[in-house]
Image 1 (cartoon, rainbow, N blue to C red):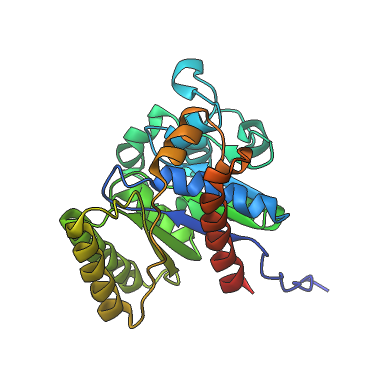
Image 2: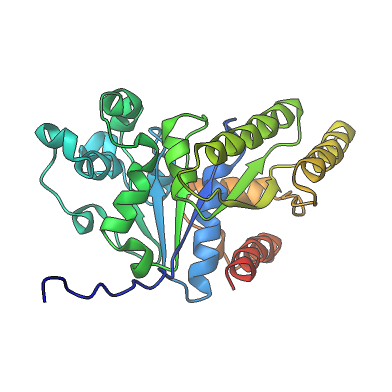
Length: 284
């Protein structure tokens, strides 16, 4: 017999969920960080990927690759491309993962040159992250893989979307967000037109750092709800996050909101648990 019987591979259990917004300062990293811990509290195994050259998510985990010069996601992405063998770094994925209640693969400043590094390769540049995850079986090792994306719609974000199964979009209720959301949905259509992957589902838009005292924010939020409903046919905007002081306090201490037991943090516990519930409900 010349050919071995090829066994059909089971669909991996893990789901990749990018947190993205082309606008900075919307609390995207904070949302990614605390939502990951909300799922970990439910017994899920979660890996965070920091794909932002600013590496703020890595800093929340207490990792400063800029100062230490240690291995980061950029080295793994480059290593996954055969055409770039001359600049490969000798490392395995487990050399780069930092383990804890939530695991993380940190970012590094090298990511700022990602598009230039990948410019000359002939293999699909949009699928580098997807192939990295598949090759290292990370979708079977983790229930969820969260990707903290840079505030752009460039190649790093396209890679996250092409690897993703569901997307979460934190935003501030303002004019910039209205324009950004339109650009985001246009990009999803562009990815769909490529025909190389199934476009991930938008799980939720999260209004963050909302000031309930400002009438203009209430008006902008209503307009954004209507905009999204027209674009996707349903309202996918969750209740706003108001507790700015508590988010800032936990972030400054490099802790999740679940590390605080005071009553002032309970609304945030509930809100992030609701985000985790949305993700679990979608995945079941």
